[in-house]
Length: 176
Image (tube, rainbow, N blue to C red; front, top):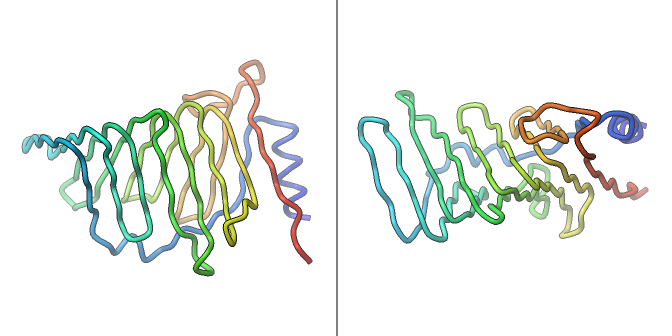
C-alpha cells in the first residue's frame, strides 16, 4: 500500500519521495581521491581535481571529469563533481548486495548532512541482488542518505513546475 501511495504522489505531481538506505559506516571512513591533476587553495580550504576523478569513502564512489572539494572548520567535506555524466554509487544497509546508483551532469555531496544532489539529466537506481527495484529520472534529484529519503523534480533548480517536463519512475513489483 505504501508503494502505491508513493506512486500516486508521483503520478499526480512532479515530486516523488521514496526510501533508500545508505551504508551508515561509510561516514566513518577516510575520503580518498584519484585524479590526473590537483590544485589546492589554503585560504578557501578548497581542492580542485581534474581528469578521471574518482572519490571513494567506504562503499561510496563518485566519479567525474572535474571535482571541487572544500572542507569547513569542523572537518566536514563538500564536493561538487562534473561529468558527462558524473557517477555515484553507495551500498545500502540491510545486506551485502543492496546498492543505490546515480548519475547526472553535476553531483553535489555534503558529508555534514549526508545529502547528495543530482543536477541535469539525473538518474537514480536502487538495486537488490544486482536487480533494479526502483528507477528514477528527472532534471533534479535530492538524496539524503541519513534520513533515507529522495525526491525528484522536473526543474534543475529543485522546484516543481507543471509546465516544465516530467519525471519518470519505475517501481518493480514486490516479491511475495
